[in-house]
Image (cartoon, rainbow, N blue to C red; front, side, top):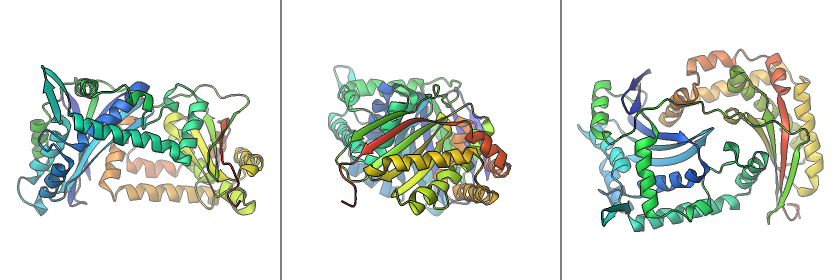
Length: 428
């Protein structure tokens, strides 16, 4: 595998040359500093551009076009990455050595047209997105926003973060907000779309068995519409506010059987090594699987939960513990969870726990090499988060010691306790 980064006036081009796949995958990423009121706009843009283009003004025509390109698969997504909002448009298609000459050009042109040739209307010198297309995308996003509340697991985690740090990067909902959606029309949305092309930081990633000179020429021909000047990027990492001396407890009720318990922990001033490696080992030992301390104690020994897990979020310097419980078991489950977190500070785990955590982490890294999308995420992490290469990750994870884990454990503090309380116990 050979990687090369090429900086141009408007964007960075990242070429990952490998003969491991029969496909070529290309991703165009737009990012800007995160603003709550813009999240909904960006989700709408993704829906709009993936729904149709001026060349293929319906979903049906888009589908026919992809079939003619040997079942090209395209997708778009908008997500929050610490202090930034990132919007991706990607396409995966067969390398032309398995199809016919010229298909690489045509496939990349399809993705470029999806981004730069939207389905628009012009009236009295005013440009807006096609109204029918807008309404379809609007309703799709509205349903997605509503469905988040209808998903108790997702809703409970979101509400915990909103209570942990209201009106902060940490609390923003990546799907967007109904109140912001209601303010958007097809004219405002098109103006925002133009601002993306003029203002966002843009990176283009290509992975496959491609010729560097050829791919550069195709991209130069198809991405000349980018008007933005390339700008330096700030760190994505968020430093949370000070932890509370007394954890905040919030209870809400919903018409569900199984109650959802979510605990939010803040982590003090992690070193780079701690946030990238030690936190992985810590969270795996605590709640990363069926061998974890939380699973064995809370589920197996005491039968107090249906599931339980802990996940570190290094970008935000927090850790969350999630559990599905019966509402009457809240106090006992919480007490046992606190005890296991305390035991981690006291070093009540052994070398086998660390070895299992490292093996799991290494195996997850090896799996990245089997998927073009995973490799793109890896190189996006190197670009956006200054992450280490795969080779360095293999080396550094093995340096994590028991002392490192105990030291990190002393920095982890319970800040917010959230219970989405069901009306009844599940067995009832």
